[in-house]
Image (tube, rainbow, N blue to C red; front, side, top):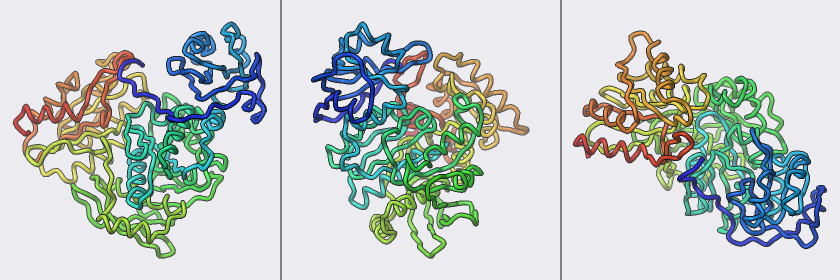
Length: 514
């Protein structure tokens, strides 16, 4: 993908390491003269290679990365890591080659060694699940900061390095990027790192070389069936986080049917939590107050621990995410009284969750929320939260990803039609797919609902949000689902600058609601 791509974050100070020592310590094979060769970084992309880097050449869907070994050398690569096939392809580049069976599988361990990320390592928290990963990550980081701990964060939305914020590239970066990011975090004395862990990250070894102190599972619902054959395969991708080589302890939410499966098949000690009253859960979440500004809740354990607080985002499902974050901290060894005292002092959790049911309107006119949710389950929970506090009509605006799981489109549209009064179907990231074709599939799902809402098809999304605002009145709410925090649209491989938040505010201003 080109245009507007965020940079890779690397440590500012790196001590080069000997390739001979790498080969010796990790028991690797090599070809070419490795004597005196030193490496100070690692990358799988030739465009991101710098002087002294190790170029990791992996086989892609259509070509082998080793075909570009000459480009890597021209950019300053000192050595290459690849497989036997790649070693033959890279021979003409004249660089020493380290040979492994699977370069991608080895990438995490190699990156850990180069960047020394396990030397005086921070605490690691990993969160997986279909929905709620990002929200839980931000809430967890917020509580840690309230307790005075310097934090790092890696999510779909952003990377945090203490007080510095950068836009994310992938939900979970490649292992080489992740270890470089952690090395930079260590330079500014980060002591706790919160990482959103996607199923794809686990499948493709993106968190290899890290062992999480506490892992968490939020839920599982229909998504990513373009990457996985069925829900069973998708489940097992998530389950991989609950392996003793990957995580030490776990916290599992039982609010979806898959939670108990994680508990039953986990190979690490786990505790459980529920916000729906599941009697099997060790921790229970009870809602004390539900309003548009926050959700207050009490978290209670089976042995009598009780913490009452509130989180700053609309929706009961957000209270479940916040409670999950608190239990993760307790499992990591933080005293419940210390957590409770910090939250009581600050009158709840202090956290900003970009693009997660984020209100972008003022107190005049309709309420407008942008949200990153892009699955049927996410739509259902977020629509219910918005509708609960809307005295007027609920207007839903959404589109679907192109070149991604098309099997969820019908249900996304159906759930939207069931939960709103007016539905505006538009475009999202069409990628290389025909936007009109995607909208047509969504219209089929929306029209399947008997006695459903008014349905409009408006393209492009810039016009869709203007239309939604133009028909909204005081007391109505507009939920624009999909773009959330993102600042681009993917159109035929180009990242086109685009902000749902800015577009929504502009539409409100044009309508006189500024």
